[in-house]
Amino acid sequence: MNEFELIARYFTKPAKGAILGVGDDCALFSSKKTIAASTDMLVEGVHFFPGEDPFLLGKKSLSVNLSDMAAMGAEPRWALLALSLPAAEESWLEGYSKGFMMQAENYAVDLIGGDTTRGPLVICVQIMGKIDAGLALRRDAARIGDEIWVSGNLGDAALGLYHLQGEIRLDGADLESCLKALRDPVPRVELGLALSGISRCAIDISDGFCADLSHILERSEVSAIVDYSSLPVSKTMEKYVNEPVGEKAILSGGDDYELCFTASEEKYSEIIELGNQLGIRLSRVGRITEGSGLHVLDEKGREKGTGEKGYAHFR
Amino acid sequence: MNEFELIARYFTKPAKGAILGVGDDCALFSSKKTIAASTDMLVEGVHFFPGEDPFLLGKKSLSVNLSDMAAMGAEPRWALLALSLPAAEESWLEGYSKGFMMQAENYAVDLIGGDTTRGPLVICVQIMGKIDAGLALRRDAARIGDEIWVSGNLGDAALGLYHLQGEIRLDGADLESCLKALRDPVPRVELGLALSGISRCAIDISDGFCADLSHILERSEVSAIVDYSSLPVSKTMEKYVNEPVGEKAILSGGDDYELCFTASEEKYSEIIELGNQLGIRLSRVGRITEGSGLHVLDEKGREKGTGEKGYAHFR
Image 1 (spheres, each protein chain N blue to C red):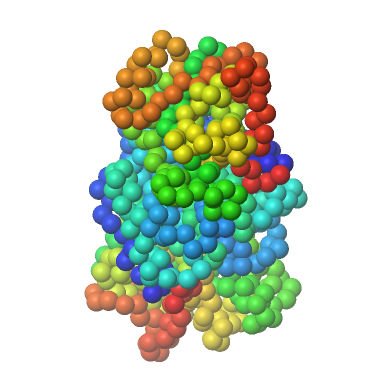
Image 2 (cartoon, each protein chain N blue to C red):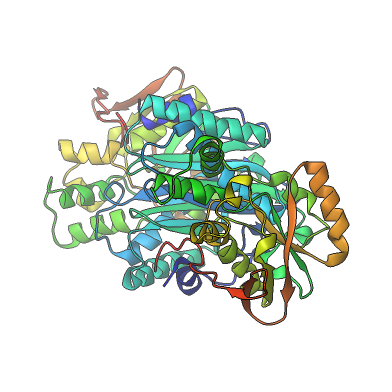
């Protein structure tokens, strides 16, 4: 099986929403709305363990890109997939392509092109979607007085990772839910779209809550006060919330793929109602203030060290 | 230097032609015309030698993507860059970013986003541009009776590669020009745009002339006869043209990044004139016929084995 057979067998489906899909020098599509575009690269041994289940890896490699669309409030539509593979192993390709294609169908995304090469296992997805530019959820749009919100729960994926790395030991339902959070994150695409007109500013939590909120603060040139006890956690995390490993997972664990967004306080009840409608936990965790830097306070109002500020590839 | 400092220092420039550039979850841009999108992944040790000059690598990593735009007849406009790097080495990043950014400026392309991660040296560029969908140079648009054309010369990059691999020994001006062809290919963007209305069908020669022309034949469900002696070669290649190594370089050497296109025969003089205007050698090398498969004939009309049909990542 050469790379052309590989592409034909595993990665070629009719592109319903494109003018030209897989198989030419370029794919073609058009949009009256503004285009949002993003890319994420996943490297074996860095972003996932060698031997990771290919189906879940296929699904996750699209999910993390869908999460960038969600964080912008964009509607995902088209994807390109560049794959570097040590070998054209059929069982791996079967699993990977099933996971990727299933998630693409779940979110009405067309795989319209890509590249396949021999090399170390590296996955690079580019995603493109539609947006009203004026309604985009930008990192530089937080305003003093805005309240800070977080979707879902924080830190479960990191707990799953710490378990696999031998730092903690989870079992039963705790282990299952944390490994699911790590391996099969849910991109908040529906929420991102629904925030149009409610929020102007969001980011997805991929590097860790403190690191990602700090990106908003830097780009918006503001400061924030966050109440540690208001950060949303799962039943599993409740057992770790006052231990260093729990704090680390909540504040700087990566791979949450939840949205952190800001909104003026008069949007409070609208946001609560939206969370109920979508069945997504939405928690108010702090406030945007004048100044600079992120200040996480404990229940006595003392500043917590935010410690390691998230995953850094180079130090 | 963490990845955010790295991006800020080397890869952040104002995106003149985009609504939002580097620094948010997605980049934003809009186009009334159809969007053409493509991606190419370059892996160290597969697509280039370890220790390759970073400036030329930066330039080439964009050039090979520009070449896909050229092959579609699209106007390149926006790029995303995903980089996996073993380390954040300043001298490498300085050189790479200079080469990439210079080529971006040469072709009026905005770098609008990307991703940076630790890992093996892998470069993945996604390029997007504008096109009139009805005028796109598609692989499936060759028609029986069309003449087949090739820009520039074939095989010099492969000769450069064979030299580096020790298969042949070049020196002086021959070595210089073949290494330049290999390391610093010129994407035929201007030619691709100018072919609008003259040709309906093109591909860029990246895997090798026979392999790439075969993609056209398969997608268009036609056959082709090519006259080996009419294939355009450089003065250097003339010395090898009747040797197996020369035939291999011409017919199945990759990395030419010339355009192979088809046009009806009444376009002959228009194409010759276009070549003169652009200062690009344009050679008529064969004809599209009924049937299937590619037939390369020698000066006595005997069929030549096309041998290895181009670079294959998996066999």
